[in-house]
Length: 310
Image 1: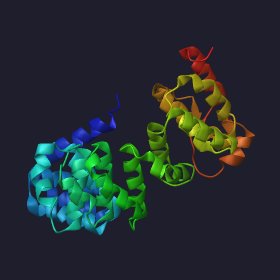
Image 2: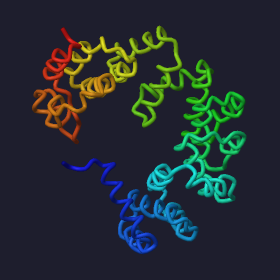
Image 3: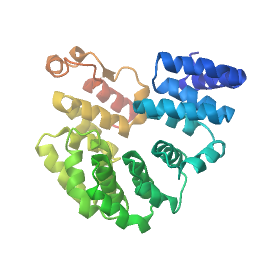
Image 4: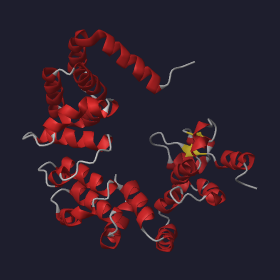
């Protein structure tokens, strides 16, 4: 039987443990050949495992040089136990180097720690990414005492910080102030659209949410279809299947379906990447790039067999 991704990763990490310090030259050689997230993960994980400050500092410099690889380093921080990385986090969180402060903030976030008053320093950090992490922590930990600081960040110079300040205010119970801005993001093609949509559904009265989504549906905005998956109401399945027959709505309907029925992701015949299987009108819509398209008739059959459709 083929190993899962997690099992393959465990094998990889066990091999690094056994090799110990002897693996370090090979890790940095891999990074030099192909500086990407996976290679940075290996370097950072191994440096932490070895508790080797020199190697860890070298990994930090790799990250500084290739900031797009951030989640390789973050993944290494996440997969190690919190007590294993605690000494580094304590050093970094108030370090003069903004990159180390950002890594400390990432570690605090992925391990769901509560930094207490140190959170205020994250919210006021010079690094935009660190401020964003601070806002997510403030929202998740419900630190209402920092609401004025959060509100001030609505005027931040960085667009991502402004967005996460709006999310944090909504999560803290002050959604009225930011709701129009979050609605605009949710209804757009912005990369933050789904986060905004999920927050709106979570923090807005159901009647108001449905009224707003109704307006989007009348405007043929697929966001309204995608939102159905977040409402956690399986009685919408028939309606979603009808939307799967509409090329403009099909992708959103498929995503909403999988959120409502995650077990369906195990079925291998409910979606296709060949638009011709769905019909000629889908060929015109999806001729560029690969897109998972739900097959409405097969989803209907699955729904009947599963007892969700009469």
